[in-house]
Length: 319
Image (cartoon, rainbow, N blue to C red; front, side):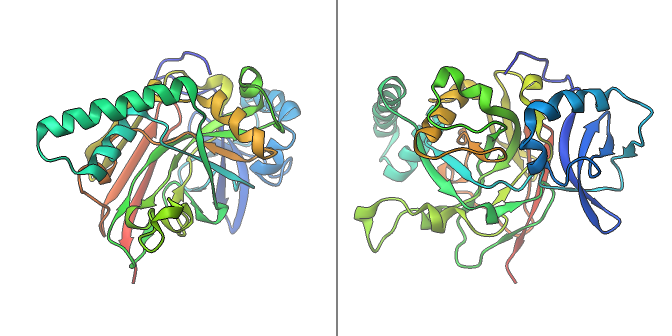
């Protein structure tokens, strides 16, 4: 990642669109879209040929004579359908401290301050000596950046978690951290929605967390709107999420315990990452769990990350 102004649009980005009864990958530049369907059938196919595709995309983005379309009037879908989704837990220092304190329910400000100090020290040791906490999500939870989110009726404790997602562009298996970013094609936005009361099994507390139940309902991974090539993405980035206009998350990626390179490297130690796979980087502080405020019918979440666009998701109660 490179340093860029938060207000500077990327020279171009990628998306997936629907119009006239068909879906197609598109090149986005200056609020216009170039249909890439004649060259690649999907963004995933394009990522599979990333080294050749990237310079070709740059040439296309600079050619004003091509049949560009206005973005208005096109349906914006999730920018890609990943083969694998690798998720990161407990990767923002302040977020982990907030959640851990909420679970402990300290009795008074002195106990809360002591808990924060203890958990903060634990996170510092983990960042210096530990490894990322990774687990697997299901591609079936992916939704578009403007799709409604149906809140499953089996719980009333659904929570937001806006995250930076790295998109793999070159196969990666057991890559060192120093080489890991070379395997990242670009970045997009993901809201990793979580049903909090299903994360821990009350019937079998000894087995720990149950991420399958807590995170994989349909629509629980709104993705996009854009896939922005890595060369155009700044560092650090600001991650901001509001609910009904009230800012809930507002944090810098500098609060990460393990950066993108460390996460991609750690994931590649176990699985072979392929083009189009996602590596989510964890969510910063400001989740509903910390304040006892969860998603309700009619809530509107707006999530933005510097230079990556904004997604807007409306929550609907399950019929």
